[in-house]
Length: 160
Length: 298
Image 1 (tube, one colour):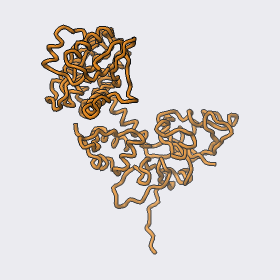
Image 2: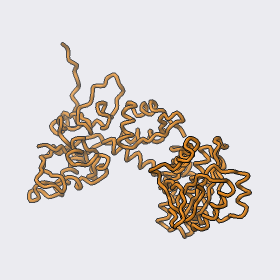
Image 3: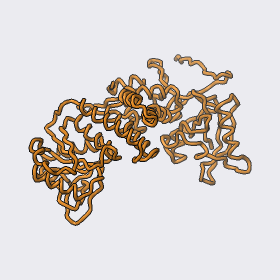
Image 4: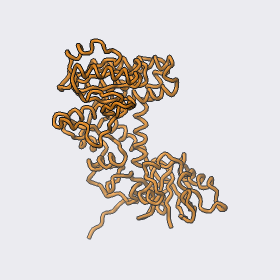
């Protein structure tokens, strides 16, 4: 049995990165026979993005993408269900309309926003923060925050 | 204006035709027109704008949003030209709009929204409004003159109940006339204030249906004009465009058309197509009925 060798993609700092669809979250199909496209060939409803390994969403993890102005640019299918808002109504709105730090005494909303800006603009390592949907209490997610792109943006993966 | 078949548009975006149709359902973009055979026809400019936005986007939604913004730049451009009283620039803005859209969509999506914006900026009784409205009235009439000769055996009598070309509804009425002409109908537009000699005109140009358009002229004047039209041309389907439903005790039935001239012209022609097959059922149950003070043309 032979296995095809795939090059390991790395970011500017040499860290391995993973590609995933911004809608369904799955890795892109191998498409050697087809011209390159950023549109996910599995679901057709998202663009293929990259994030450092360990930050990129794993199967079934909901996530959002925000740009350096903190406006929502992508909402995964799972996150649409979780937040109760379709991506088409969430894009171009401020992330603070959807997520806020879960423990107000431990972390202020500005801290979350500062982390997102840092992820979207610098090469800092991934960070974690506990967040909750705005207007909901008792629901908490440990969120991974890190860079993604292209173009450069911040990824928020909502974990357990 | 260049249009693309589904396969061509999909190839330009490097996606499958199914994906393109899925985008239309989910994002409402790109929004195709339909060919005479009901096949999708995409406007090249819209598809190209989306292709460029996808290169820079983080999601299809954000790319669609950027592509739409690129297209609304035409409205901003026309607002800017008319606000600074530059007619040549206004003509150029409409030319740019026409490069990306059909004439109907250019009027609906660029010209008419421009006037909503101008109305909110300076009011409809202002000199800037008059300046811009006269330009638009001329533009629409010119487009109508350049339209092909009638191809349908349909003649529309438009009872113009607007004040004048500065009436806020007048541009929509001109747009409706233009769309009807471009759909192959013959359009005769007469002010509802002119009752004398109406029979002579209608004898020479017998209408297939009547559209009473605009809300400025009072109901009793309109009723008098409609009575004359009915006496001369017989009972005809009557539709109301941009005219509030009349009120009163004497009943009449007319059909209210949508506010948008494009939908209005489609509905009007659609109703007319129903008429021969369903002689007395042109106003089906569920159709919006309007009760008027006098019996108007039914």
